[in-house]
Image 1 (tube, rainbow, N blue to C red):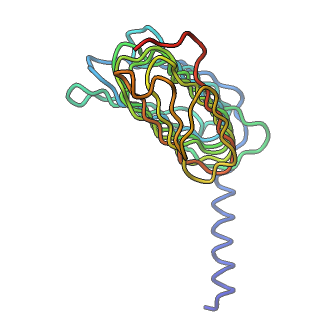
Image 2 (image 1 turned 90 degrees about the vertical axis):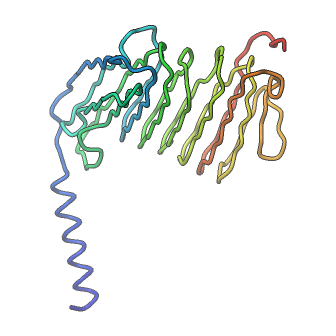
Image 3 (image 1 turned 180 degrees about the vertical axis):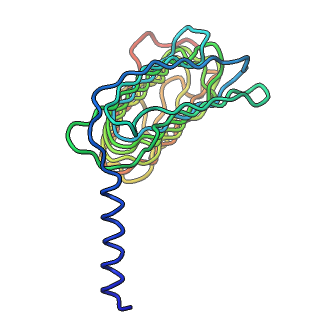
Length: 243
């Protein structure tokens, strides 16, 4: 079999797969989901989302997760898996199928509230779209964000009693990080970022630090390895902390 026939065969297989993945709109559906912590003392939460809008915030609630999902494709229906291993609750949220070709308007929105009562290690894997991660008030043990394509706003401001690490990878688009003023923050930037705007931070090479860095007992260490786009670093407004 010559190369041209092999190429045609691969193309046919691809087209058949693409056609089978096409899915028309089923009309807007809304689901509310609650996940109890079931005695977990800490949690590992992974959110995997394709195209759409993701909003995450903290709430004073007993449940580990309170979520509202809006979608108009069956394959975007959220699947939630949760179990407790030892004292750690392990939560995964993702659409039924993350890949496909859609005709017409696609709507996929997640509004998620996480408990402020237990420490959470949070991983967010994004596709294309917009994300608003308001992590104020959450007790975080780590944050890992895969940006995808689109816009991301990550708010880490507020009081912190324990330090943690943050990793932001990939992405073509724009990112805004809101940082606390009362605890030390170091941001290390690498990759092909088009521009970095830093407000209220001191720059040294590819590192940015706030006034509290090296003075406070708590430190947030942030590593950003992003693609083409812009990065906006902002220290929350407020009174200068005393150390």
